[in-house]
Image (cartoon, rainbow, N blue to C red; front, side, top):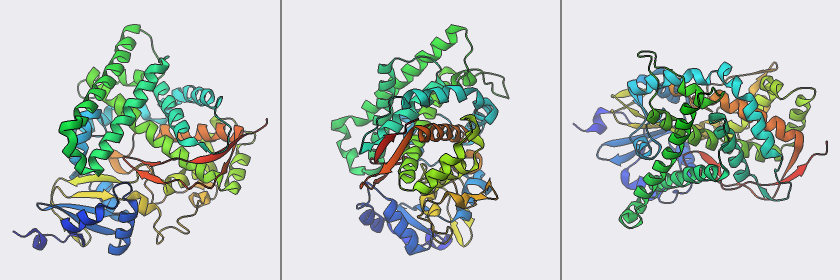
Length: 443
């Protein structure tokens, strides 16, 4: 049967058109996707050949339908399977009953009450790193914040002294594996050289080395007989509700790898974009720092304007700029119907900047998220995804970013330079670099 007659797919690109247009957007597909959204009314399809279809949308109702309302008919797409070879079978890549079982086990460790025990670790890590933060003109803040975020997360997971060379090795392996995966996805022709470069097997060995490091820490912890107030202890002491058993060493290792990979990268990106936005919006900085007066660092977690500043930064530069799901069975939404295995791309970046949904969408305007002194919610806003698979670490991320901005803005002044950062939409939305002038505040 002809699929085109059976299903009502959105208009879009044929396979040939997709190949011709995508060749010009390998480094940054956001402009092409954004222009295509405008051309096709916010939702369009791409043929992948052999009756395989891709649907991209910035329609908030369509996104909610896939991620929330009918989430049981959707799973992570086959593209996610590639990552499991390197990052393991952690929560981020699991589907179905395996995902549900793992999510239920891990969710309690990330409740607000649980992560309160990590506050002192986070605060100390931030203070230590900011004590030698450079105060120079044209400082590229991205690698600095990447390192700070990495240190915070690793110390929150493992509240032990890890040798600097081991920390450096962990960070380097994560970066190299992400770079490989992005190149593998965005530059298909690179696969032709794999027999020569051996890139996949080289990165598998790096992943094995990463697992070896983490398993060593787990075994050291198990043999210590001590209790620690860190995420590793929470995971080691978690029990599956159906059997009462603990996670295996292999599963804990996979989860730790995902936590470090997803956690530090997304937070570093968001904080970098936030400092870039704050550097050019002095009125926001003045209002924010005024709200910090006569308060403690713990008080900042209840600071509604600080929350709005962070929310607005994530609106303009969502770390998770898109997400994908594959239909398990045939489905339909509105006037569209599509076959099983269709991949749906939720384009958060485009939704968050949609001029029909946001007033002055390109302007950094935190007050849009505040009404009567309280944070407001919007159905057009997906900073951490949505539905059952919403980011499990969202509470921890908000704590980390709040503590960082409170501490940083009390010590430093940031000013813009002539440089305009370029977006690098890899697995997350990172900047190429962000050059700012950093000045120490005399206290």
